[in-house]
Every structure is written in C-alpha cells, then in structure tokens.
Image 1 (cartoon, rainbow, N blue to C red):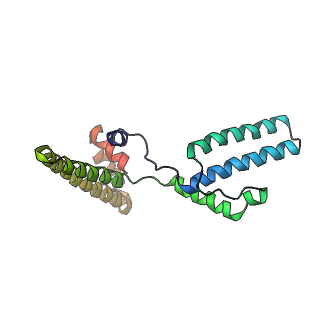
Image 2: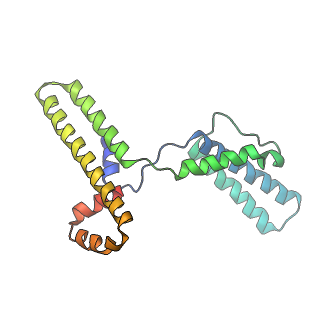
Image 3: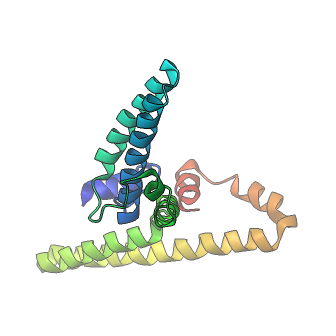
Amino acid sequence: MMGMLAATLCGCGTLRWAPSEAMKQNSYLHHRTTEAMALKARQKETSPALQKLSSRAVQQSEAAMAYAGLPRTLPATESIDEILGGENEAITRQAQADAASRADVWEVADNVLELGLALAGVIGGVYGTRAVKALQLARQKSRALQEVVRGNELFKEQHSESRTFFKRAHAQQSSATRSPVAQMK
C-alpha cells in the first residue's frame, strides 16, 4: 500500500490499471498479424529488408504480448480473413479505448484513504483512533481540493476572457501547491 501511495504522490506520471481482456486480445492479434505479414513477405519473395523488418516486428510483438499476458479467450486468427475480420476490428477499437482511459486520481486517493481507515479500525486503541481522525481529515481535504479544482476549471471554461487574470493570480502559488494541483487537472 505504501508503495502505491508513494508512486501516486511522487508523480509517477499516470496510474494505469492492468491490461484489460480486450488489450490482451489485441496484443495477441498484433502478434498473429505480424506473423502472417512475415510469412507473406517470405512467400512473395519480397526484398531482404522487408523480410527482416517483418521478422523484427514478430519479435517485438512477442515482447508486447508477454507484457500484456495471454487473454482468456483467443481471437480467431487462423487465416488472414479472420485476422482482418470485423470481430477483431471491434477488439482493437475496445483495446484502444481501454488503453486511453486513465485511473481517476480522486477515486484512487479515496480508495487509499478508505483502506487506511479500515486498517486503522483494525489496529484499534489510541493509535487507531488517532489514525482514523487523521485519515478522515485527509479525506475531507482531498474532497475539498477536488471541488476547488473542478470549480476553477469550470470557471475558466465559462469565462475565457478572465483566463489570463486567473493564471496571473495563480502564478503566485508556491511550487509545492502548483505541482499537485497541475497533476490533479
């Protein structure tokens, strides 16, 4: 838990969930597509450079597939027509949507705080009670900050003429304040 909290607070960039089933299927599809491409390149006696490129693509797709993991259900890939079929196209579109989605920072923070509250309740005693109070306060502050950031973003959208003044006013913030707020946007 502390590792996840540290990674989230220290700016690991973004937090992404594990690959979805569609992402795993798409990774498998990509690998099978590159294999079919490499086979066609050899059969059609294309240039040595194109054959090397297609072989390299197969190797690279193996690494991506190993990272994502095998899907529970393998998509149809026995022929080029199956690989290019509509069902596999839908898998690719879903995988793109899944890959583009990011974890909601507010949801993650709230879940971490709830976990902390539950652990503090298990610990009990004086330290558990203090921990619960501290975590409840952190949760209230997190929700308040969330409301402020959303309100500011809404204000900037609705009052574009004031955007310059808004930015100038916020330029006076310390980097300790500016950095977390920018990450939350």
